[in-house]
Image (spheres, rainbow over the protein chains, first blue to last red):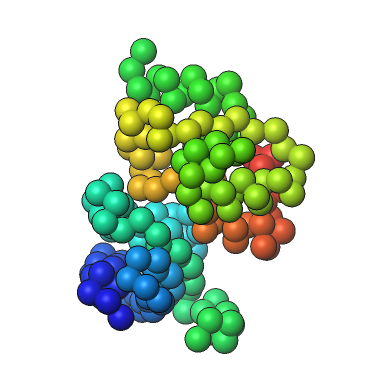
Length: 86
Length: 102
């Protein structure tokens, strides 16, 4: 994983409580993040994404990070879905 | 008219609105193009704006919707989401309702 990928992972982990973060970093520019947290339970999908995306708001603004695909899961949903991704 | 009022007026005039990079016929970003391609599956009319042409609106929208990236798909004044969420709703068969504001 590149430095930028590690930075994204760390930033999300620090900001989203109880988060487990998997980053797929094929080229140091286009990232895919899978964020799993107990705190997503009962939270609408858009709000889950906002919790994650806004942690990188400044980096999006400077275009330092511009291609981040995101999927969020509750632990329960991740158990079902993870075989598709990992 | 300040930027907020401009956005509000634009949303009032467009029940379904896509703020994107480029235009539906000339998308200038993969994520924006992806949403345009998804919307092509639905016979929903939507207005679109190229935020690359208007830096003021570009920042205004990020503040207005508290959302850091584009594209943004807005229905009845409510942000539905960006590329990830629109793709997920489409994959889950929930986008048709979302486009009707349900």
